[in-house]
Length: 467
Image (cartoon, rainbow, N blue to C red):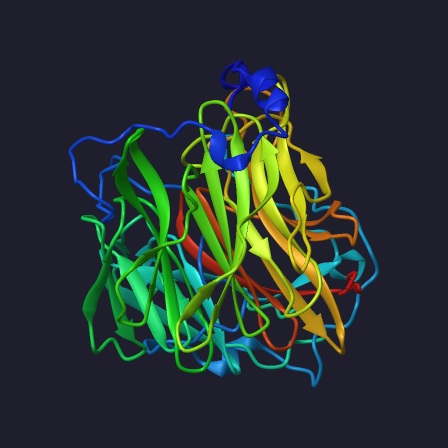
């Protein structure tokens, strides 16, 4: 977000920080009318809405599709990548056309090294990453139908694999700018009209299960071994006008609103927690932005837990994206790029306790300037009982207007501080990022840039996180 965009009523938002979450006025921004309590799909313009990539990082199901050759994964060890000596960020330089040239330092001095890739993908589309056993799926959206590229994700190598860039054989195509979501064996993909189709891994049993706001992202997760939940945004007409809200559809049951009365939702994320799911909802308004979390479980039927407002910040953009990384037990973190005050912009790292508390502790990681939308993704990598929360984010390289975008990977300390570890070389103008951790503790980063869509495996040193 350029600095002039920050000249908004932030002081008012700060004054409202302790206000009751549901007391903010609803937004009215949609055309048309659908009466009653039923959600309606409403248009928000063309192109991708910048919400949350679903299914990234957390044991979601793999899909059928284009099976990769395991030989290209290089020389594999029996364990995940060994912890390497700590180092600073890659000293990446901007090319004249705005691309991040990305000079990688010697691997012996790196926190992370490339284990495979970057791998070019055949569809230019934001990616949903799903780990299944010793494979990972990159799921692309062909206007409501998944296109899946599968690559091996066995034991991580103990040293860099000099495979280099892997390009696509054959034609490349443009996909839809809103990613699919993966939950177990099920894949959910929205189309340009807002219809959300559910298929299985083989691409069969396709049918429409929901009608979402067009150009908005969805999220999905498995409630248990037998039930899956789709979370999406829909518009509902209230006494205060049209409101964008969060809705949930479990299996083939009728959708259910999960936004509280008086609250809305403009972006979503879902992650497994315990035997259920934790839903993150961003409610971005012209006066303030509220960050909600709500647990969902299943006991003969879906059960909604308490809605907790863990953070209230300044005005937000409806394209604002957020990410969520929560372990099966204990505290996790949510990540929201937003203006901190009139002149600064950064990543709000908000703790998510179990159970969540109102107004959780948080820390800031500042950007040189603002960026709308500001892509962010998170995952938890585990090896040998130790785990680390990792974040992939896109930020401006410098404070000047039009500064090139940098794709940066970092770890999160137990206190919530973002510790930069790696700057990934790209072709510039990164518009989307997804992150997943496989069973070996290696990281998979997918991104969309000026050159196409890419997937890369990184072996990174792990540090224990707070429980």
